[in-house]
Image 1 (cartoon, one colour):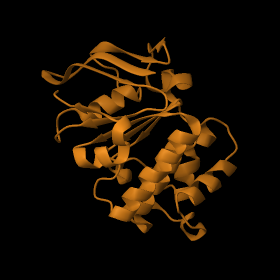
Image 2 (cartoon, helix red, strand yellow; image 1 turned 90 degrees about the vertical axis):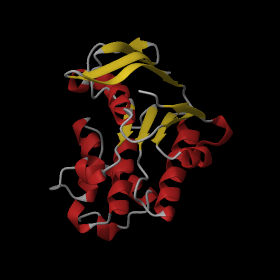
Image 3 (spheres, rainbow, N blue to C red; image 1 turned 135 degrees about the vertical axis):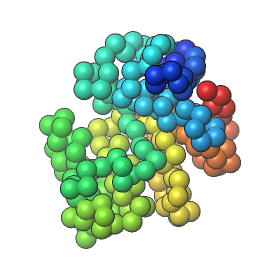
Image 4 (cartoon, rainbow, N blue to C red; image 1 turned 60 degrees about the horizontal axis):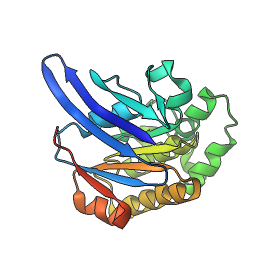
Amino acid sequence: MLDATDITVSFGRRRVLDGVSLSVRPGEVVGLAGPSGCGKSTLARVLALLLRPSAGTVTVDGEAVTRWRHRAPALITSIGLIFQQPRLAVDPRFTLLDVIAEPLRAARRPVERAYRLAEEMGLTPELYGRRPHEVSDGQLQRACVARALALEPRYLICDEMTTMLDASTQAHLVARIEAYRKGTGAGVLAISHDAELLERWAGENALLVPCTA
């Protein structure tokens, strides 16, 4: 289980999160709903081990997190994070295939998996060599989803990943993540300000948690 307990995050005198707790069980979809600016993305970064909270604890499958970012390589690779704005989440010098293969190369794993993931995400071969400025937001976000799945994480955090995408791309990305969840038993945290979208995605198994930070 991916578990956050009493998470508090402050930037200077500004408190962004105040004692927030949330759990994601393997195979479960949890929907985190809340208005823009309430701290959803900050919580996502804490859960993805990219941001150390001011107070509170995070545990991954019973193991308490004591190190963050590159100091926790074994744990951080078990959690995939998909950002809201793909253009801010990739190196503009990378091709789409480079984006997908980046975590595989960092983990010294075969990059052949990147081709399979690109195909599953609906990216055609002529797109593989293109850079971010040469593709649409939807195509780039497909590559970012593939990148998040590259190391087969046990938990996946989707932080407003469908914002500003067309309906067909939204449906495709949600379908691919659902297929991954069902095939691997991974836990999914779906974050959005759109509660209706979360209900359509997660269905009866979702736990819609209002963000009150």
